[in-house]
Image (cartoon, rainbow, N blue to C red; front, side):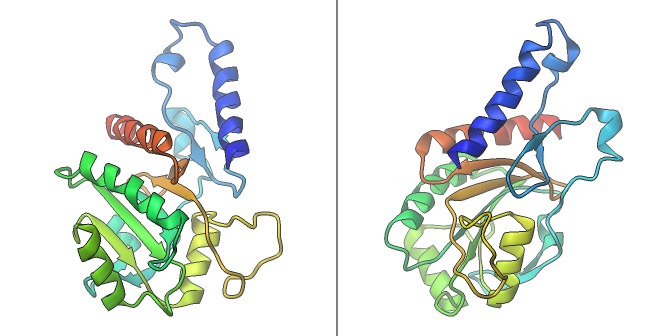
Length: 219
């Protein structure tokens, strides 16, 4: 994860060094796009963005903690933050949830920003379990979706759409190896990945909040 973030910072640094302070490109630089599993950042100008082959989140159909069916159509037009967790996780997941609560609070009254957490243990995290977890955590149903469904559907979505796999570089299948990642992903209103963050770090969540506001300005 750290190597991926450093790659993005290096690319951004090179861009700045090759541009003068008065360059319009510097003044209007936005968040990058991510279309590869190694999270290599890419930037496009307004003319190129329409024809560029930019990765988008694939269609899906899952169920949230209130028993409501959620698809990609419910998220399109929104800016949302996605991660993967399971309710009985004793270490990383609680820290991620604590940090994501900061994001929820920062945009509590903003209907254009949502949070989406996908369970990686659907055989444990039923709708009822997720509902109880949401109540204990004070998670707002319309603001933060806790999603469950078939394992194959969740793992395929995680690996192929969100590039969520700490076993990057290994040979894995959608329904076999356990999927778990510290990554938190920022997705724009057109279902394109625009940022990736370490969900266990408070500093990274501060950067995420700033990037959401930048993305709102871009939109």
